[in-house]
Image 1 (cartoon, rainbow, N blue to C red):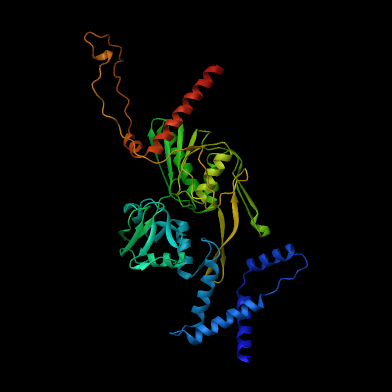
Image 2: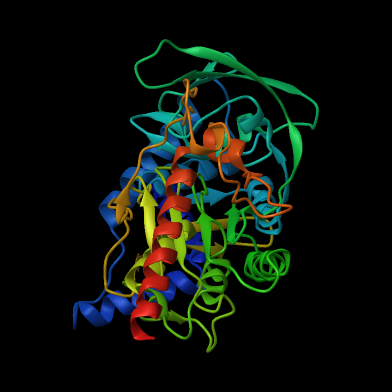
Length: 437
């Protein structure tokens, strides 16, 4: 009995010493909410924990050291909170920092847990995953020969990591189709956050694959380049956030700042006093109010939904596509020591009008499912210009107006619809100006 009491005492000390400043703040906040009810440690539950700890240590078929048991206990405690909370060991902590800067090794996928399996939220542009044809919503049922049923996100992430150049097999399930195997080669992901081009004269296209530290600056630069390429002005811009899994919050705020002249972007609410924060843009609109359509789909998550929700609530853009993913929770990184950290969900995101994103997502103003546009082959046609001795009214040097980006729009139905909408907005705007004149 004396040995058990000593073990319990040591366990109490270990658990108490592991609380960070944030945890103490959280307990203080809870104490204030509970009035005079003093917070007490759950002694009965801790005794059960110590009993299980001792039984495993003495009776398990193979010896396990104390550190491994404690780490497993912490991981189990955190993994049952929600899909986005996690205990980060040294390797995962370093990987998280690398991802924020846009350079990391791996397959190029954002994952979550779904029905006991690992689900792909979105593949990252120009990564082994996109090159292999992996899609949002695919379920990973095996990593090499290891089933992923009830595998934690941490373990799945570690299993898919390895040396650059090594191959890995993922067994995927897509919808109701039979499982199929995709072989990927691990690579150093050199991810470019922003890409831009003129889709056609007057209409620009900006694609954000993930929100990184400098994404806001890159969007600003892209806008300037598009204006320059179009000789000083734009009639409309498509901002593509499809299959964008999120990223750095400040980058999302900086992106909205490129299209809005002073406004609330997002606010958070949680149990801790310091979790209630409001984020605003600066004065000035670098886009000069250019008509804007934002494309989203079920792979648009987190920071992407913050941007889309803000631009929608501020009546700054038309949101088009399909309902977004619905990841509207805030994860705070709480260092436990110099090598490990706790990624903990501490609050929820809300759009400027107070809409929660969590599990609801952003509903587009115009729902457009993805499809492929096929051009009909023209039949036999006769026009005035084909008649003998017709009057020629063509101006000297006049050429047919061809679309340099026809192929892009044919391949991408949602983009073609966004451009059509922008053209309609441009016509309406011209009509309003003429009426005023």
